[in-house]
Image (cartoon, rainbow, N blue to C red; front, side, top):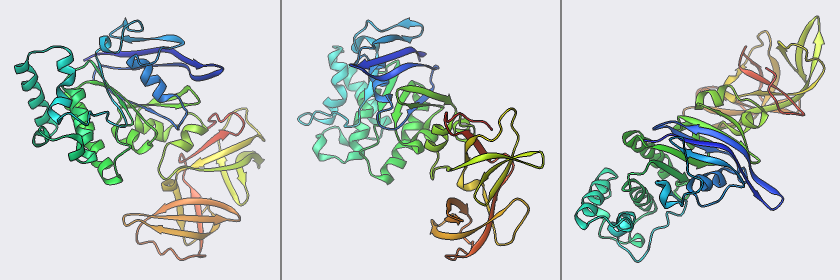
Length: 356
């Protein structure tokens, strides 16, 4: 096991800062996911950790030892790429064995470790085949085996599941999470898929425009987003984000947007342009009015078996709500909806910072 620390890592390409002062730590055996959209800098961070890119400034440490001056080979990290990078002319056995051959281990030890790793990843039957003779999911396991057989201090994954179809991705992420916990190897995993991040990570580091925005466990990232970007990026389907204003009525402060009113508790914030965020599962939908609700009509209904998603039209404002599979969702039906206490979030529109 190893502890990985990234300290004020910066990478500049000409006038463009791809990574801007990123700092975080992955504890011994921890699974850390770098999550962000394309261009957020997450792959560049991973490549600097691996030694494939030199940082403009900042440092990478393994067990408090700086590794900036070391080559990728000397850092004792194993990296799995998006395209798997298997050698097409070599058998699967030789693809897995290559890192051990580079280290000049004896043949008996190589055979022992390759066979043990292949058994662990359930690919023993593939060892005599070539990459062109196996499926994409099997190629992904071979790439994993080549990383595992090295017994590295740190695993680095750069969107390794993105080439798989949807069903295989779900199966592969469960397998990979179980494998990482069994091996207990410190892992940094890059993805733009928030479902992968939420289901696999011990902690998620959310990046945007080269900066680390928030780092926390999946539940905290989902339920306590630090700003408007994290709130909108994490969650499937995404959070509803509604622009409005804070207004004073009867000595109380409300978020106001069209027919909606939501009481808020703030100190020193009045009559400011804001954005209210509420997740689909936190929207109450009823056929009869209850205190705090407002009228809307069903614009679209999307049944998914276990749940339904309703797009609601509240006087021109669209909201996505989650209801049960048996709810009678008729198009243009008039309903009443609202938000429970503690289920909606408030953000300052200009800065994106969370207010409540």
